[in-house]
Length: 306
Image (cartoon, rainbow, N blue to C red; front, side):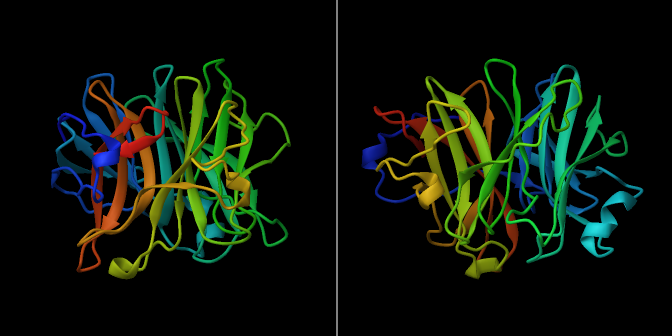
């Protein structure tokens, strides 16, 4: 999707439709990275995690599964299902890092694992092991990971869904695994529907993007994309009105409109032309579909999509 001139945020009468994408665009919980060659690699929820590639961020094609031979280490958490959830892909130090979740719907018997690859191609990924798990004895849920590396070079993993909300742990940059036992709370809705944290930084602010309400109900989904910000990477994050995200705060960035149902599980890709919001939404038929919009920022530094 090519950049166009951004309208003023205040002039947006309604949310924009997704930008034009073509090809294999059936996707759920997408994450996308720009490769050193300048192409795009997306990974998403599905059997053994699904890969797609694009030369131009518009036309996408299937590129197979991350683990074409399966991921036996995950089946304890998936009840034997091959479906793995909510991957997060990034490229650092000559390697692709992929954090992903194993769970069953409605359960917090869950785990986040790490895999790495030098090419990103199907079948090239090395299992690096468990990062964090949760159980019914925990008040959090270890799914929906996102790796963020701050300007000081510190590695952080945000994650979580429902229960007591979204969490953050510190990682060891040399291993990509946990560096201590601290679990920080960064957002929550008193047990309500919040998930899919994604951290970005622009200027003096760290932005925490999240999804509110219900995913995975097809055209009945009520997912919507929210954001808050902080001057510290660990928070506290607040919305435009100053409400803490740990107290249910969040400024709405994109919600369902027209034939675009339940946009959410967002990722943000910083590209040459703009910051890019990548997400899934459901069509009228209930099909999960790739959504891409560009991100602008108003005079107060709050993001909007166009």
